Amino acid sequence: MKGFVTVATGIERYYILAHNLLISYRRHSKSPTPFAILCDQQNEWTRDFDEVVFMDHPAHSYIDKLRILDLSPYDETIFVDADSLVYKDLNELWALFENGPDLGLLGSTRPNNETGWWETQNLGVLKEKVEYKLAAMGGLYYVRNKGRDLPAIKNTCKFIEDHYFDFHFSIFEKILEDETILSLAAAVHHIQPVAHWNDIYAYYPEVRSVSADIRKGRLRYNWNNGSGKPIKKGYFIHFGTLNTISPTSDGIYYRELYRLTYKSNKYLNFKDRLTLLGRRFVNHSRLVHAIAGLFPKELRNKYNHVESRGREHIC
Picture 1 (tube, helix red, strand yellow):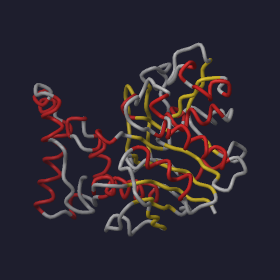
Picture 2 (cartoon, helix red, strand yellow):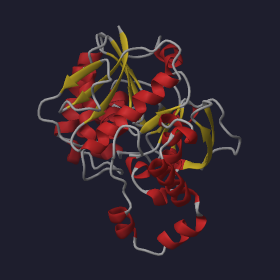
Picture 3 (cartoon, rainbow, N blue to C red):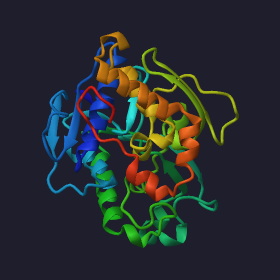
């Protein structure tokens, strides 16, 4: 059986993000595939998922995403990061991985003598096995959970995790992280990315511009390092957690979430109408953003996150 999986552990905010992802997926799927959540608690945000799978002793960090290798309830799994919203039927992506490796990544490769996420001299016993550098973005992974090669890939991931700080990665050097572990493990097993992530989804921190309307399934974006030609066939936006909690991040996540969950304004009570209008002002007012930009970043992050008020509200 095929199925989608996302991960949420720890504080409630991550569960709300996962539920928002689920709503957006089902809105744009003609025939929804089962969607599971890997988590460490059951609450009001998990009840709408097709399956709830509990993990023991979660790390409450990036590394929890690696548990999809062991805990996914499906034979084939597509993992989507919880801080994402979907604009197109994700079931079209199964064909992308159909004839690929047991671990399907979206990314790019470059020669060993070029700058990358690791330096060859730091790889120790893995040095002779790695013929190129690979960088895979963590917004989406594919796993063939009963694949012949997956046990060996999992063992390599565990080895890299256990010796993580010996490799001196150039990103996430001081914290265990899924992207670096899976990228290096894929290189060890000579796995090539099936596509580049920017052809499949918009990673919001790296886009130069984005035009989106989740009600219509419209998504267009330009990459900072791209050719300038907009991508019109992306499937989802991977916002990054900070861009889902701070109104000073320009408010696209809030706007799209309102479009996704709220009925027309005429069905809202007076209090909710005022809330909607106020939030739109905060999200779109250049003056508000300019004033907020005068304060230190630490203060903006401390005072501008939005607490959840219920399933139908901004989170």
